[in-house]
Length: 631
Image 1: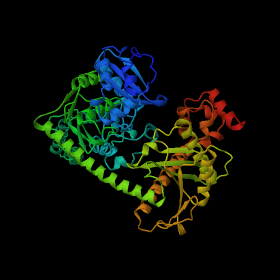
Image 2: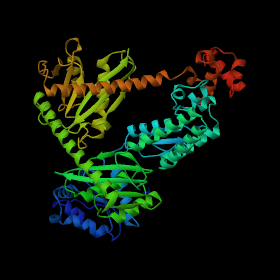
Image 3: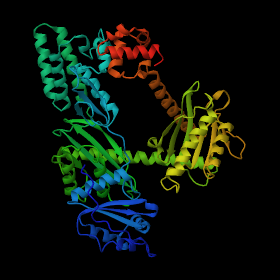
């Protein structure tokens, strides 16, 4: 991504006249140039409303002053505009890249937004070890090696890793486990690893397996299958039937994954197939990933703020943001022509450093692939509409049961978790009309060391205080949609009183609070509901709203326990050696391999410590003094 160009075309914002935002926008036209660039429309309080790009800034901005040409969403945006900012660029493609970057980073209110911050999983074939391993990977490419993907989901990665184990016998263990082994592990016994850790295979032979795996992931699976078939036949002719059977098993593993392809891409190698379907103001975009001639899966997306825009406009906005932080393949197949398809192709080519083609196929296998993606988009949108209707019905039931003024758009549920008071954490989950909003989940490590271990009331007080102090500081106007309409607490009258006191102390009196306590013997279905100013009550056992509340509570419980277990696992993984100055991971590993346990290191003498590889006399003295003289 090119660096953001310097702001060359921004003039001081004029005062907002009484006739509204159109006059504000018109005030900028005198100073705008007929050049490509990006413009930003800003509302009250400096809130960003919209980011757009233009081949000609002056002509594009002038269109906003002609009200009769604009849909209702744009008219509302123009009315709210109090200022504008401009950045000129050298080309329209550069403006498009900058626009996509700003939209994804700043999330303006009126732009079509791709709400997807999750990276795609990949497969990494390492290159930082004499016997490289294969593993799942997400995030930055910091480890030396070759990355293959993206895969649509972890399931597709796991299936491919299983094939790599069966067909190429590559290791998946960590380097520390590899170096510590003295005999083959179970994977060797079930013929999923060649056991290089105990010299069951030479480095050259293992390297050949790694190259075969790379060729398979690049799409040359048929070449590998023919090679294995020849080896199997040669071993069989030599009456080495056991080795022939091993090649047979490897060959079958490759054959199975070829047979599992959902749709045969034919001659397609590296490409993404993207199709948009629109119905009743809602949009679904399906993306299918093909790499090396194989289907790596698909994922649906549901852009927001796109009700007034036709499918080509929605798709263009999606593509700009989708490839903002991931490399595009050489070919992208689409189900409709983009408004600026040539500019988009040029922009992606600039970003990727190679030619990228955007094509809307009209016949043949490629058209069939696009049709398949479109059918999936249509079906996914139908499912989402059905699920959304059911969710809205449940939320209406929540409004009725708790006598809320309106259907809650955001429900926050809180729970705590700890082990006898240790590693105490709090968890917050969020639900709304679209179900669980997992990107909005939050975890809280209990910081107050004055809290008595196991004091759930004090822990809840800290969690709620931190949550709402931050909300009041970051969004005092409640304009970002991050304030809850309803707060659910896992607990009874005591927890409810704590929550009420926290909000009252912060001057927040318009957020509904409800406590849900398990019934006698903690039986699900007999929950007691506590509300401020009302007697506790229960819902009928078969009430759908009760099931919904149980799901919310159970999700909060699951999340809090997961956070606690992760924190406890990190603590358990620590050693007394971690506190010794000058002892890093490498020296710690050498000491543990030599002595077998951290306690043995603490009890060792100076001369014994100095015998360890990488431990000098000075370091040995430091370790000895740390354990025998109180550090």
